[in-house]
Length: 162
Image (cartoon, rainbow, N blue to C red; front, side, top):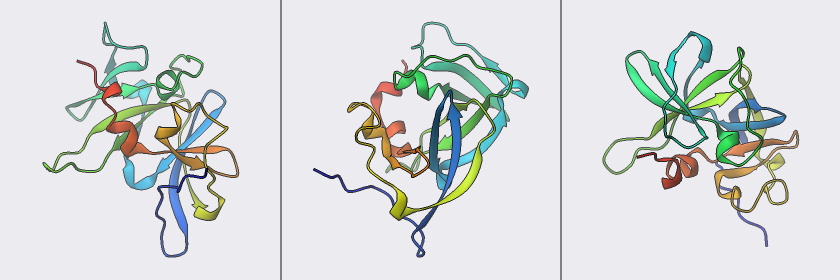
């Protein structure tokens, strides 16, 4: 049974996305959720002991601390090492009823690229990812870029480390 895709584009039926890579996998997220991109090497970042493997650490961006997540590790994909070309994508979800929105960093192996896709080319992610991971995806493009559902990811209690 087909799922309805949870994506709204502009009047022309297009969507601006940011694409990034993790190993051989290519992911995308809606541009409206991206606050900024920073090369990891120039940031003041630290490992955090006793956290799940998907937590790369915390990063200091202009005096604010953000958790940084390895999406590949969270999704159970091949574990990777942070490299010299790694970047942090600072993403923000939608505001909750109290006016606050979850923000965190996602690791990218390379400098992300902004592109535009036609909504009609977006297909259901079924068959390309595990059933458990599908809840974090809005679909897959014709170029095999998996479009993330940032709101689903940021609202999942599994990413909260106490």
